[in-house]
Amino acid sequence: MATNSSTDRSNLVPFSSRLKEGKALAQDVWSIFAAANLPADCINLGQGYMNFAPPKWVTEAAKEALQSVAPNHYSHPRGRIRLREAIKAFYGPQLNRDLDVESEILVTSGANEGQYSVFTAFLEQGDEVIMFEPFFDQYLPSVTFNGGKPVYVPLHPPKDSKLKSSSCEWAIDFDELRRAITPRTKMIIVNTPHNPVGKVFTKQELEGIASIAEEFNLLVMSDEVYDCLVFDGKEHVRIANLPGMWDRTVTVCSAGKAFAATGWRIGWLIGPAYIIQPTLAATTRIVFCSNSPLQEAAASGLEQAKERKFFETQLAEYAERRQILCDAFDQLGLKYTVPEGSYFILLDISQVKFPEDYPFPKSVLGRGRDFRACWFIAVEVGVSSIPVSEFYCEEHANIGEAYARFAFCKDVDTLKAAVQRLYRLKDYIGA
Image 1 (cartoon, one colour):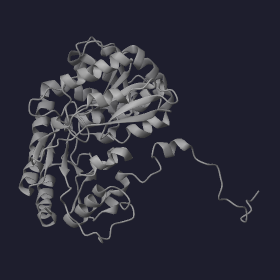
Image 2 (tube, rainbow, N blue to C red; image 1 turned 90 degrees about the vertical axis):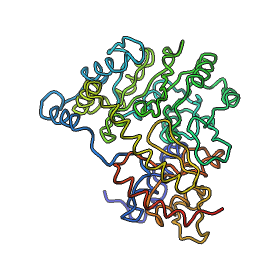
Image 3 (cartoon, rainbow, N blue to C red; image 1 turned 120 degrees about the horizontal axis):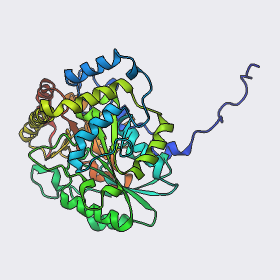
Image 4 (cartoon, rainbow, N blue to C red; image 1 turned 60 degrees about the vertical axis):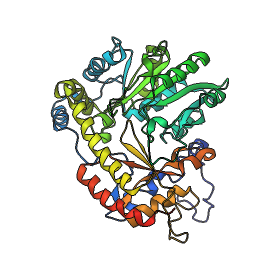
């Protein structure tokens, strides 16, 4: 029967409140600063994806998998056995464990889906999750969609006025962390190397977090997707290796970050059976299984990485890219944070001046000053970045308003072209 066109259609079935609580309906920073909204020739140093291909020997493995039969069909929800065996061989020595491929490794549809499945498996309504700010923005909806309540503990930026500081100077206030714990706290998220700060948590810092986790019986989600990008001889410490912490830690890793293949959406979780098995039950009902042929390619990558010295070579290439941006920021005389890990640099943009009557779009008005500064830089200078207040709760957003995040996961020519444009910022730097 045809619908009566005069019937009031303004009050149809409402969407779930969880979308609002997780800020999923708000226009996010990625859509505001999408290439479609910016000048056509704007160089994108905002979003953290590469503009170069994965290694050819890894993509060849993907082609080979596509041309055979089995990898074109469902994989076991745990992940393809070849990839789980490769994860065991690669990460087992780093974790000082003989990993069980049946109960201690789980392949997921990207690291993000793996994290979501952990929250689904372990959070009850009202359970609290500690998140260090600035935080990867997907954490918030992943927690709230599963009934959790985020509790924010900021990393404190260095207070001195020097132009160049290290990401290690972004500090945890452990008294503040302890005060954030309540009887409802169930989990702490640790992200090292950290996005967007680039901080590589020290063993002493991780021991402090571990002590609190042990005292209050907390689960630790250790997001280590940038574990292959640790610079300057710094040590990447895995919190799961600290005394007592294997039993309460799930380690999150990413093929996309490891092999410059972010669109493949292949990640994995490593942890004790009591964490992995419930998470398997959750992920089986969320996605059932992950992309089969690209699991084969990721397996090939891990199998050959050591012999090819791939991660050592890749790290040197990223160090060169990092240096290009650091040299430019030195020339500009703007304060910035040198990252010890990941592929992001935070630039202090508090001294970048723009006209108050500049024709900003509505999407950046009413947001932090960093949104307007980043928009102005993208339009007038031609290089996009991401405003860091997006990675804070409203209460602490003022900390992030001083910074823009620049990604250096781009080829050298692109970075050099971006630097030439960034030198124009000299015209907009105020006292």
